[in-house]
Image 1 (cartoon, rainbow, N blue to C red):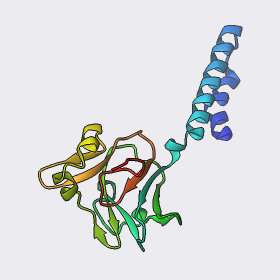
Image 2: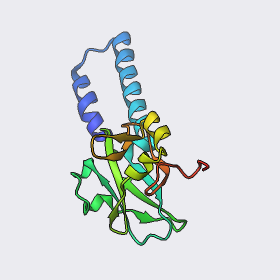
Image 3: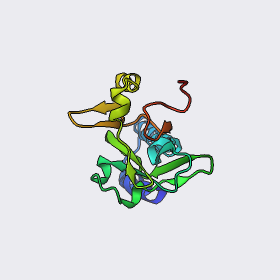
Image 4: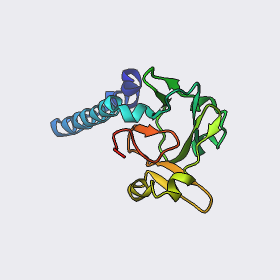
Length: 163
């Protein structure tokens, strides 16, 4: 990045008539630009996004999403087992737009309609992490909200919630 930065910003200055004020202004722009780049590199949510779900006893887990064109065999949707009953999908680079998704466990898509009919999704619908339309109940990730942790496959509850 330094070479490209030098080419973009320092090359035009070689023939620049410097004054103390203009040089200070130019250097301040460089400092703020560099700080912005460093902040984005240090932000783990800028580079990647992780979805984690509990699916104890499962042999395969996938993330099924509108970001994958609802292709249940999309290679980026394959979850890796964490050896504690949870599975994680790492998305790189992180999505910049909202996502609707569901989990596929051992080849079967989760449908939260039964959970919704039993009144178990109210809290998640209110907080926006589950959305419903005419025919489906889907999980929802809001752009910029960070990693998803604690979900339970085929349930509207999170791991930390008590019955």
